[in-house]
Every structure is written in C-alpha cells, then in structure tokens.
Image (cartoon, rainbow, N blue to C red; front, side, top):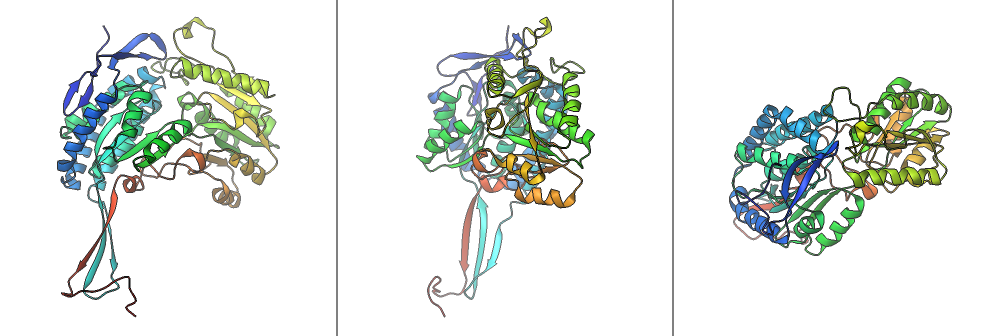
Length: 495
C-alpha cells in the first residue's frame, strides 16, 4: 500500500478539497509507487493564501535574529536526516546518491547562511542635506510569497527561496514539482519540527496549470519566485503583471564549455563529463555544448567518446552508477526527439543516441549519454535547451570565435573556459554573456553563498543565493527623522 501524503495548510495536514489524488513513481523503476498525493485546485490555494496572510502579521514582527535561530535548527535537522533525505530524493527523481547528498548539503549550507543573515539584514544611513535631520533606509518584509519549484533539485532550490523569504519575514505558499512532492513534504516537516509557526509555511501539491496558476494570479500573493522553463516563465511574468507582483524568474540555459589548446586536457575532460552528464544532463546549468579549438578537436573527441562509453547507466541508489534515468517518460521522449532533430540537421552521433535495450533498464526512463559532432551554431541542438544527457560538440578557430559561438543563444546562465592563459581568461570573463563564468571548472557547481542567475532569456535580472536574494525578498523603506523643531523643506532650491 503506497503511503498517502497531504497538503499542509494553516498548521494542519489536509487532503485536497476535491478528494482527487495523483501518484508519484520511481523513474528508475516505474512499478514502484513512492506515494499518493493530493491533486489540489484553486480552492486549496485560496485556503493556503488565507492562512499565510493571517500568519504574516505575527511573523513579520518576530525579530529577524529569532527567525534566523529557527533556520539554524532547520540546518541541524537536515544534517541529522541527510542520508534519509538523499535516498528518498534518488528514488523520487533518479539522480545518483552522491548527487542527492550534495543537493541536501546545499540546503544545509543555505539554512546556516540564512541563520546568520538574521543578524545582518543591514540597511543604510546617509547624511541629510538639511541640519538636524537623520536619514536611513531599512529592509522590511513584503507579505505572502508564492514559491514554485522544479524537480531536478527538489531540496536545494526550495531552500534557496523559502529560507531567505522566511528570514526576511514573509510567509509562504509552496507548490513543488509534481515529480518530487515527497522531498518537498520532508522539507516542510523539518520546518515545522524546527518551530516555524502555524500558517507561516503552507504546501499545496498539484499541477502547474491548476495550483501554480492559482498562486501566480492570486491577488493576496505579493511576490513570486519561480524556477523552470523559459516558456512557462514568460507566462508567469504576464499573469503576475496584472497585480504588479514582484517576480523572480530563474529559467533555461544552453551552457557551453570552451577548451583551448593550452588547457589541461584531462582536467577539461573530467569537467565536461561531470557538466554534461551529472544529473543526467537535467540541470539548467548543464554543459549542453562543448566548444573545442580546432587544433585539439579531434584528439579531445576521441578521449571524450572513450570515457562516455564507459559511463555506467542505472539506478542511482546502486554503487558505481554514474548516470541515472530521465525523470519521466515525457522527458525521455523530449531527449529522443532532439537526437532525431540533430541527425536530420546533419550532426553526427559518436556516442549513445539510443534507449538502452538491456532488460535491466526496461522499467525505468533511461537514455544513453549522447555526444554529437559536426554540430553547427545554427543547429537546434546547439541553440535549444534539451534537459537531458545530450552534448553537442562545436569547433572554433580562436578564443574570440569560441566566445562568439558561446554567446549565440537566447540564454545566458553558466559558462566555462579551460585555459592556462590568464589574459585570455580575463577577456572571456569580460566578454561572455552569462550570469556565471567558471575558469578551469565545469558549468555546474554553484555555491550557496554566491549569487546565482543569468542574463538574456535565462531570467528577469534577479539572483538567488548569497546576499543578493535577500534584496528580492525584502522591501526597502526610507526613513527621515527631523529633530530640528521646525519645518525644513527638502527638494526645493535651498541655495
């Protein structure tokens, strides 16, 4: 009998008002049901928003250091439950256990960072232009935050959003991805155990069309933080504009790694293997393109193919597995469709490119790690986000040419350059159009205390992680204190 899960609204675990449910299954073994979850609707969202709105009045008045104390307890609980959470996550979305442990650790790091920010929600003071007058700007909570998260980092990404939102004094209505609702529920259980008051955090399970849209369109939700596809992000931006909500969008990527002739080839090889096939390529920061200088192209491709063919595909809970399954059948179909598109446009498969036929893989959504050569910058597999284990190799004549190819997409999230030339590295840092640039490291591997986000159609300018996210989840309030005892007129000609 599969475990039954519920929504958490106003301090109580409740079923969807409709009574409808959906199943959550293991992508490595689709016969295994992880749990049954409430298939919620607009009415459930209304209840959650009402709860969050009511709880906001007390939560905003809780001192920020006290809110930080609770988040430190959250971190302690996550440490204690790390292995349990990691195994649950691998069963739920497929990536290997070493990666899900890293996902949980990112949440732990974010919790401890947020805890310290409770004593560092710094404002600013500035001199007044008038005598006997004091000027300052402080940060205050905004209200109810709608949090909509993806399945590929089902612990890390929700913590990137929820912890700063709570620390700043906001309350939460949380809609996790339908592919990873169990990990999200575990996070909410930890928040409750750590002492987050009733109504401050609410979780509503269900589809994006029903639950996500209801949150974005709700007049009593003050801000939205969303991670997902660029297409959905554009729709959210339009919907949220009706009520002038503050919106943070973390969207797609088509990230590239450049390798120059002077690079450490073995290091660059390790980087692209990890960047392209970690999380089965299902990351917004995944290395989807490899741009090789023409002098080392053929040699590097031979090295790459040999290593890719030795990557072990399988259940992420099993020892020695390098690459897990796609998260569901539709995602695997998407990957297969892009492989066919690549072939139609003249690219050449040199590794993978197929669903494994071995009976060991019959019950899961597995796809062999795939490498294309003869890829042109105008090819769709070089421009569009695939979100799967597919790497497109392109050839460049120089560093400037490589940067030109790298920049030739609508996205601008992460980027990577392998070189020993310090001058070239700094030129690349300057000229690459991306929110993140790595030198001699792969395109994946964000750290919790640094800003995370991209440019162009990768987002709308906000950042997650580090100190930058606290600006999104708080409002600046300017305060003037006049102790002159008389009327002083600013913003007129006092000279």
